Length: 415
Ligand SMILES: Cc1cc2nc3c(=O)[nH]c(=O)nc-3n(C[C@H](O)[C@H](O)[C@H](O)COP(=O)(O)OP(=O)(O)OC[C@H]3O[C@@H](n4cnc5c(N)ncnc54)[C@H](O)[C@@H]3O)c2cc1C
Image (cartoon, rainbow, N blue to C red; front, side, top):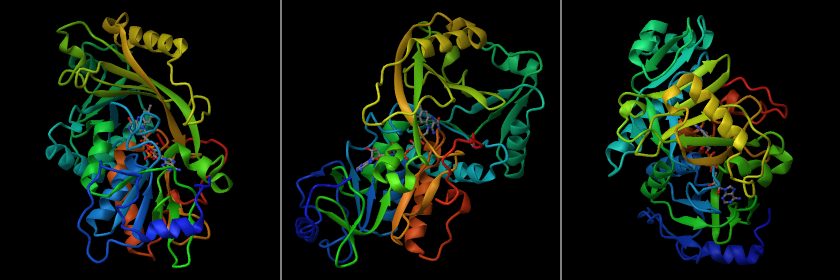
């Protein structure tokens, strides 16, 4: 996608004060930088969703001069990182790589929440339940045991006793991760952006255009020696030759239902975040946090959509499906009013693994995305890894995050 400016204009703008471009927004305050504040930035991060925000934060804290560019603004309503809440959990079955990233990230979320006026993390715990003998549950518990993370575990009877507001089928088992819970998504991203101190540019960036001094021009007025494209579901549109069909945005609907006045059974501490893990067909939800209602969603991929223009109205069929589920599992919410909802999109890689690799032919240009419906919680760890790649040119790309491993036919294996 061309930015519509000539190379000459770009050089002129890039050579001006880093804060001089008219498109700079006030959300981030420029940090005092060692050396000149003129000329190319050290790093331009394109995309102020959770991956870009934490990348900018980590890079800025490491001393780089960073610019953050977003076409619609941090955690805008079209972004995958938008909205009220996200689950953070460490259970990932056999995928210890994500358990470790989630555990590392949690430390950052807790610290961020502790220094904010309003929380970005609610330690509600996360309840997983499934039919007997579930391998994902066994592997998740084994990881928690090995790594010393506390949990509560119960059979059907214990689940019924602990969560009388829910219904469990005979034989079902469950466990509650005790340290995790929910993140307040939009607030968290906007706070991280602000804390990063990186100047924010509201513009649609184009593919990197190499300049004579070796830096890249990415948007009007912004040139940098390194570029991180953390464009979420837009990655395939921006780099159709490389990522078309490899990062696929799918429509996802979430709904919030309202419990009766004074009914505390569907809010913390009575109700944790929960996930009904039925052989990969996952229904999940969050308790009523910050008076936003009881959230429910299904983790199945919807149809492919365009993140710029998809219709964001809930479909009656999805609301019916949620009501049917509520009547089985949360019967006292079966007739609860739908108080609000949101249509978003996942940005899926073929199997659910992230993408953190170089744009082919460009040593200093990074593609970061593929959150695939589970990326939010990992923002800090992703940012940390991006920052390390920029600091250490020889750091090997994690094979699971490589471009090479990103296929074009869906074969989801990470949940
Ligand atoms: C309904 C739903 C539920 C989810 N639940 C969970 C959950 O419970 N737990 C969890 O961990 N994860 C969850 N996820 C996944 C998680 O939210 C995403 O994986 C994550 O937010 C992706 O972040 P991102 O930064 O990659 O993308 P985004 O948040 O989409 O950010 C990309 C940004 O790039 C900008 N951009 C794109 N192209 C350009 C350009 N050319 N120029 C300038 N700016 C550009 C966009 O405007 C956008 O702001 C869920 C996702 C959805 C949709």
